[in-house]
Image 1 (cartoon, one colour):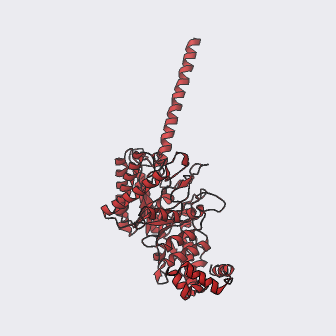
Image 2: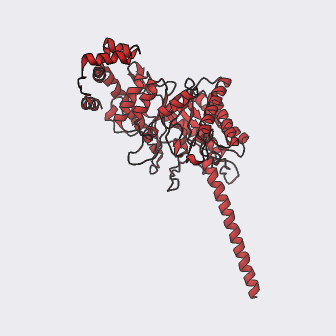
Amino acid sequence: MLATMKTARLLLLLFFFCLCLLHVAVSEDEIIADRTCRAEPGLESDFGIQKEWEGEFFPGIPKIKYEVFQGPLSKNPLAFKWYNAEEEILGKKMKDWLRFSVAFWHTFRGSGADPFGAPTKNWPWEDGTNSLAMALRRMKANFEFLTKLGVELWCFHDRDIAPDGKTLMESNANLDAVVALAKQLQEETGIHTLWGTAQLFMHPRYMHGASTSPDVHVYAYAAAQVKKAMEVTHELGGENFVFWGGREGYQTLLNTDLKKELDHMAKFLQAAVNWKKTIGFNGTLLIEPKPQEPTKHQYDWDAATTMGFLQRYGLAGEFKLNIECNHATLSGHSCHHELEMTRIYGMLGNIDANSGDAQTGWDTDQFPTDIGEATLIMLTVIKNGGLAPGGFNFDAKLRRESVDVEDLFIAHISGMDTLARGLRNAAKLLQDGIMSELVAKRYETFNSKLGALIEEGEVSFEELEKKVHEWGEPPLSSGKQELAEMIFQSYL
């Protein structure tokens, strides 16, 4: 009897051990599926039929409008205070200056999860799966959101809009199905694609990088994924295609062949240029700089580094830059600095509109709310003549604690109003000309004959030395920084 009981206990322990192993295996697979947007079966009803969403995705949310007789005085959180799409500023409609776009990944795939906590977002249209049926439902929600918000552009990553399959062929088939629906919805609404991109950073295969991976198999897979992503972006009429190399960098130089990785990345980008021309895609190719995170050092650290890389490898004429404001601050610059650097070299292609938090050292992707920064940004945009075919893409997400559906609208309204207010301020500042006069006065000595010769490169050091002997010690002149700051603040 005792032996029988011991045997029964042993069998019971073995049974629970097997259950634990099964749980661990399933949990790991679920984690990978979540991180790579892998397809999962959709939830079914009691009759085994996929449930279809009925009615609006955002009931009770009206079409967001600018209240003409209220404007900045409006207390309605679901109304624009500064953004009046059809209003003309400096001869161009506000919507054409700003060309707002919604980022599909943050708006419809942002879960609120962080390294310390589980997801907090539970949108009513979600069924708890990452099935193809759910992806199609999200796309419909996306277009209702865009329509109600009054935004005519949207952006996407391939694996955000369609689930990853077990094979590349299956992944491509999923993507084709979602793109077919998106194309139909674009035709019905008049909304179109600002840009697409390939997600080359989330799947474990890209842990060492994509175009900079030390494994040729990964390099080839990344190329195939970009090929398909560019094709569907072209099919959707996308105006740009973006490369963000989140894992194109290193954690340590001890195990890294720096030159080989940079060379490989350049060859990859050249192949992308070649494929763009092969398929007849006329959109602009954009590179998005970021200094680090998730890598210790990312190869396109900032605008200057990226432009230098493109120049070094003969790619400067094929690419422009997509400047993200939070990435600028992570690299130790202001957003205004990065925009001005790209503008003066003719490389400004698009702006990912967001901001960071000065008290944190990572990419928080918050919606822009700083009126001063928005004004500086719009000064550059106006001087650039606009951003088209680029625009302002809200690469920004709700805070973890913001869990109401209306928060999606409020966040975008606030961001749009911030940049619209910046546009109004910048236009007035440039029209009045006070700041322009102050800057011009600082450099007025170069309006001389000698100054002109210097700028034309027609004067030698020897000639300049003779002038110094003739003039003596240069006089000191004030930079008027405090006056410039006073003037700027008076326009906010």
